Length: 358
Image (tube, rainbow, N blue to C red; front, top):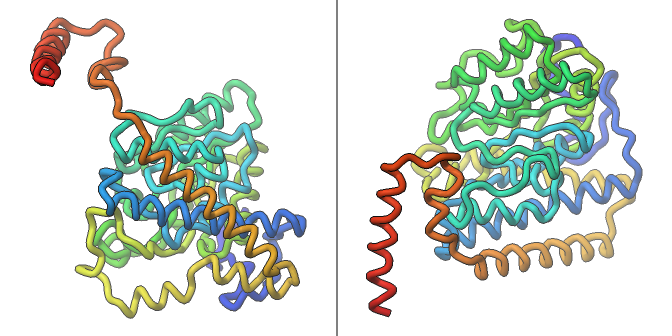
């Protein structure tokens, strides 16, 4: 995988299939149609999560609207034993990787769960809320897997803003020095909360890799086929002992950074309209139409599945039990200190007063 200044693209903005000398897609017709299903369902999950927060059912939500191709395409390119380290916006990765385990993400954003799922069950780490720390976790896992002789790779997902954190640069350096089997996947959605890309960096993200001694590649992050092909190649290279790769997927966050954010305060409607015209699902649907794979029947099946999943998302959240009060202190220490136990007793006594009053 050599340095290139070309942005990899396999689909034109009108859905035309483009040829590329290096990156190819060999998915069957059924797999191509299933990609469309996953893109649509992921968007529906995201919209439902946003709606639930606005209705007071979730404390916060981090939308992935517009980034579906980057997440679905990359996740589909991985093997079951590869280990994924997400940040906090990878709802599409979770859905592709673990199916309806994505419901556990909603518990996290509702405040009903402190974590989510068993990381070993789907080779999927918990959401990382601190910015960039998961990159180091992925490298550590990858180095350990290499020492164990396992033919797997680790994948760290982060945004463009995270590349300004020291943890990410440290992860790049450790990965390069140890030839770690890791893929760094940056979803460059143009904004680090309200800070635009131009104020974050003077050079493209992917070019940083070459300074650390490993390849970087930039891909059209709204082109699900290109993302799939580039990620598959990087993962195969990692498993074969080639070391790390940095992928910069150029995409756009169509929604807010989180539901506490108001993007109208820092970006223009013209910019938003430009990127709406480039959004990934419409482009991919146009490709399916050109390939003779799209039909009203397919659309009906996909929308029915999206409706079913959305209903399950809503029902799960609305009937989610409150966590026990003991979750505040359980599993924090193997041997709780006396000060914590004393505080816990005080809290129990305080709560008991309300129970006694009915």
